Image 1 (tube, rainbow, N blue to C red):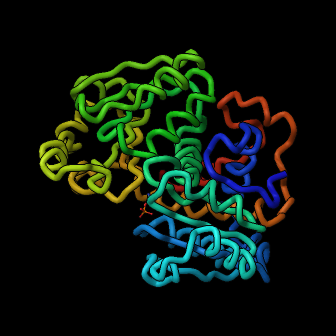
Image 2: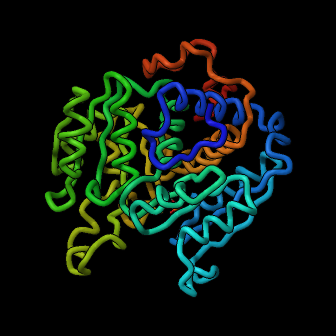
Length: 337
Ligand code: CP
């Protein structure tokens, strides 16, 4: 049961729980009107100590669509943190008002600290370069809705693989499903941290290769996950300026890609995907934004005690295939992908 639990990193969820959240999210996409009362009388607090558009607003939209209410702040200067109040005291206070808290904080480990001082579930909405588990839920749901499975795929991760927390979380999550292979596309300075290779890929027997040029890899991919160079994590401006345009996905490069490639990006983007790609049917990053709201709806519902439509025990197998009878919502409804 997820009721009352914290979500600090994607590994806090078993494969069965991930599948359950994705199944519930898919049902919510298909029949949103069925879930309008699920959180009636409940309150979500969104505490954002760092900027956000999608994560904060999709959390708030998710709670409102479940019939609940929201409160919170969008920047630390709007809270007593600006007067020196500790995170522990802030969390103790807010957990007296809300039933669930979504928090983004620039400090790695802040969500874990918050969970140690909260009487209600803490959802990590991003802690520095560390974790962003609801982006991972979003990414998994998007991949499953579009590809019909989350295993047996070749996934290209492109751009800032060093600082991109969404990349680290997705690499870990997709390594738990069988048959996935990674192509890591980055400049030498922005390679994925060694621990992902040595402590995640290698023990799980995950195949991977490292390349420098997107053109070399794009033709072999099922998923291309583009990322922004994380300016806010650089220590010096010169390095950022030198590396920021390492990869730009444009229509010319898309000509080299398979017909069924799925292009994802956690957003915000800067220059790494030319806007001309947006109208390509393989560009799925704005659908991904919408799936993020449904993934968060399903998560909030479970953490606050909604027990309807729980996953059957056989979903714990983690085969990476969508189980028979499980909804892949938009495809099932025959909408254009
Ligand atoms: N993907 C993501 O976390 O976007 P925001 O920073 O806008 O929340």
